[in-house]
Length: 277
Ligand code: SIN
Image 1 (cartoon, rainbow, N blue to C red):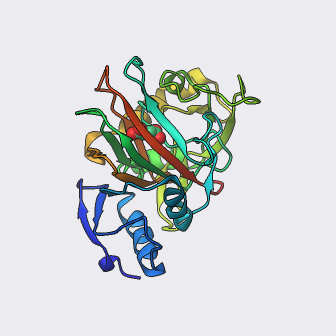
Image 2: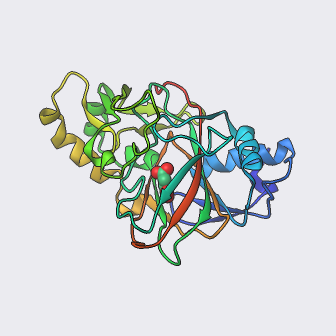
């Protein structure tokens, strides 16, 4: 189904597009859902405005794109375990997700995609940035590509970079103190587009498999900087009811923490993914 069924405006040169004129509260025809999925593959992150969905409508839309799953560390909202509140209260100084990352890469099968719906926003600020990880791979030298081809990254849920953003606040009973780890190829192939992706991130990748953290860090530091260079990114400014949907297999994101003393509440749903290869 061609994406022409949708009105699409790009928000950055290499990632991100707004989709206009679609009411996600409705039971969308299959051809529209297919076009949204196509736009997601083309733009890596897509944004909709004015989608004041009820939790049931939100989960129903997410279920048209993939299979909603529960986040391991924060309980869902009442009656909707797959809808995770992402909250920063006025008295909190640290925000959730305020570091570049792909979601939960410490799981053996990280989510294919994530949806985020703006419920309450600061007067100004609180944007989210996204970075294109196909280009992060493609802009490496041939020598670096060959070096990385054989490497696997070890991701941990307790890395300081992520813990600082309190991603694990509100641990569920049974997961207290538990550290989740998973190993993934540093270069993965996107299962739908067949394109190669640089698949490490500063929030969760701790080291290369078979190496110590100290041995891994110099190269990881280079990759973390390289993969979030401004020319690989776009920045989305939220409005009430705005909804973002990003492909977690080829995009990273970070929430900007520039609204101290104000509240920001988002509702997040992640969609089941596959084992990176
Ligand atoms: C997240 O990392 O999932 C949250 C991003 C945001 O709140 O903008």
